[in-house]
Image 1 (spheres, rainbow, N blue to C red):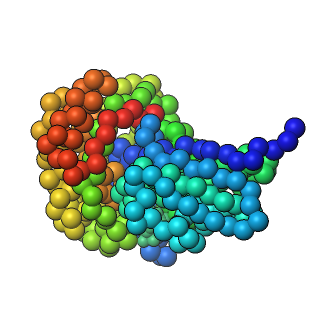
Image 2 (cartoon, protein in one colour):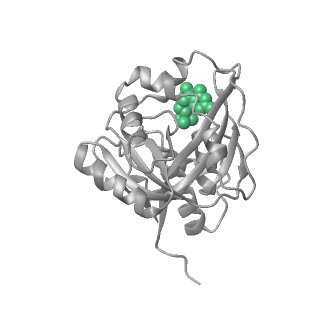
Length: 273
Ligand code: C5P
């Protein structure tokens, strides 16, 4: 059988439904306890074997995304150890707390595994804290600095994602934390509805992100006022926030309303799984 000439892989948005900061290592990295699910919106990565590395960035969110070795896609291909031509079709906002760059890097590694018919053989956590969970790309609990991944069985959730168009620097948010030794998450429910448990968890980065970028607090307030919003929280280090709804119709109504009332914000209904 001949190997395929190229491989296209979907790179879904990663949503931290809860994110607890439980400590800090001596090297500065923070210990996390987080539950993560993946959206049905995301970027698309196409990879082809080539004589030398190249990266082309296309799509509605391409502006400002580096198309060289600063991009995590490029670093992932280098870590895999083969030159490839990458096309990154960018639909997710960057520096947004939804793992765009990490999910793109994980998609490059999965595409290269298929193209070259071998394992990636690289330390995915060294590429970025969210890369290991993005390799799994399904509901999981993340611990350590993001390197300990435990798959979770969770029913799909209906959500609206909103990003107000400001980038938030993850290191700055971590630096602005007032406490770094918060309690871990309680044990995730097994098979029971996730919502009551999620409501009792937190995102410990949320207050710091709101202080650095007050528009994040406006997004949270706006989401909280939506009809049928059951839980409203920030993802990752922001600025993207989400609201959970009982069903797809309620999420779609909320997203349509936001697109009318806040046309400059990136808003979308999605299913998390
Ligand atoms: O690994 P990633 O590029 O996502 O992390 C960006 C920055 O966020 C790190 O350089 C570090 O400053 C901070 N970070 C942290 N603890 C983590 C993950 C990220 O302090 N567990």
